[in-house]
Amino acid sequence: MISLFKSLKPHSDKEKTSRYTHSAPPGWTPAPEISHTHGQYEDAPDNEYQDGISFCLKYSLHRPALLPSYITDQIQSQGARAWGLEDPHTSRSSSTQYSPYSNRYRNRFSGKVQNISKDSKSGDPNVVRVTTTEKCKDFCILSDLPIAAGLYDTFGRKGVYFEVMIHEMDAPTSFITLGTACKPYPTFRQPGWNRESSGWHLDDLRKFFEDSDGGRDYTDNGRSLPLPWKYEAKSKSKSLYHSTTSESTQTQFIPDGSIIGCGYVFQTGTIFYTYNGLRLPNAFDGAHLPRGELDVYAAIGFCGRTRFDVNFGGETFKWLDGNTWEWRVEGIAGRLGSGMGESSGMAVDELPPYSR
Image (cartoon, rainbow, N blue to C red; front, top):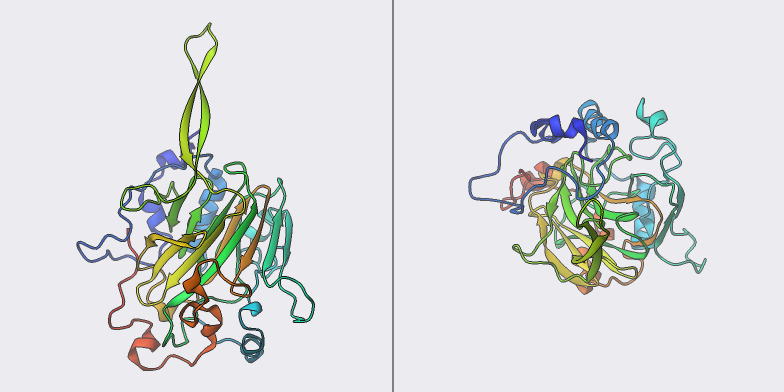
């Protein structure tokens, strides 16, 4: 059912959660697909919808920061294995440390996050393992280290990339979201729903960037993406007194065993996704710019019973280009940015920030 609050809400409400107030140059359309007013499946509760907006209005984005020396030492010694996910049970999570949200949304997460062991001889997999139960509500976890650090030079690197292997997901009852976000971000909101965040939602396969409403269809210039299809039976009543008939429709879906990747291009702010090693069309351009003003984190959302692994590069990527140095996350700990382009975060040919 369409919520009363969302049906009465002016479109400008979601604009207020963005830090950008200007429009993109004429003729430049980063996301040509139609923006839906409502979700394909069940919408988030009104109070969570409004709390997400209020959270972003109340708490300013964090400025980019230098990595502590012990972190850079870890990156140099462990490479991509140094990355993990925030512990959803501690105050380090993005919104659980902010009152009144700390009490209101403290017990939403139900499951377990197993980060990579710091002991290289442990024999454990070089991926982050996540399991959630059917009691888990909409939740977002960010990487514990940024995947794009605004104060550091990106010379010689195209972008950054990570992957998720899905072991268990039953969309739309349970689903996973991949994307990016900047801190602080409300953990009770899926990636892409609020300020400075993007997400590909694997229940309805729509893409979101700062979109608290229904998102956009993720297509290849209006054509379907190269994803599997399945038949869904829908009942249709012929009359008040007679039995129903069944109709079949085809829908695309992400099956268990799939590997979904998310990439971010530094210069253009392009966000793209991959499916089983195949790069899909760009989802958004001009995201998280100017680059030097933000630290960007990997964002993983989920709801319901799921099981998946997050690979920051500790294991070989399915998307082959992601294994080259141009896309490796450990390249973040390079030299500090210097000169007008890097210190301001805006390279000469860099696109302006994303705008609808």
